[in-house]
Length: 336
Image (cartoon, rainbow, N blue to C red):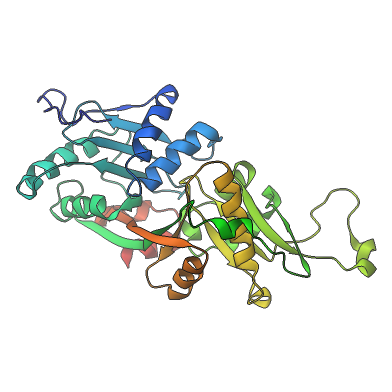
């Protein structure tokens, strides 16, 4: 997890190893002390400790010895078919004139991650801004990938609900005509189809996280006169009209309300309900909001979420490897 200021030897610099499940709680504690920059890495590590992530099979790699205080790579962190996905996090204490040395050390560490092929497309998932800035520099210089093409999938800020600002999350008022429940695996395709970045995750991925992670959904109440239409055998009776879920990276999101049910307070209702569930688990409550989405920023700030640090999702591929992508939609994203 880093040598804590110990100068790495030439034999060990740039070597990473996979961390065992037994070591993850210690890593989680280290990452908790480095929030909010470590939010995504902390979220994934916490999920690996608490939940079944068979859909991703995420591995955690850390540096054996490095001048970074903390260095880790998690992979895969997305189910995007045909694209390698990684989350990189490091914490460092350096002087500006040492940036060149840090770039070279980072390049060696990235190249030593087992199974990672820099001649094929790579999706950098949820890296904080200062981490991705250095990776971009390596990419632009050709140090990691030859002739890379890239596209910024999403540039966001994390918005965190602190315990001091979470009182409203315990004052949830139901909306007349609707009931609250949780998403079930039968809703996975419905949720996936309404998600903006659906090309980066499979429907099976949504099935897995809905099965394992907390979620909240709003359903229209069935009028008493339609009681006979209720199924008697446990078959899904209706589709949700608003919902939110928790991701393996720890964030709550994928918030959506069907257009005909908007402006009734349902998004606020499901958001506060899930915030309370996550808070009760003693987990950080945070969302990612696109920097251009002023309506969502205002919406979350009114609920007590406070703007923290920036995170970026970005894809890279060598110009001669674009055909490796499985879907036309994903290929278009990389060529943008």
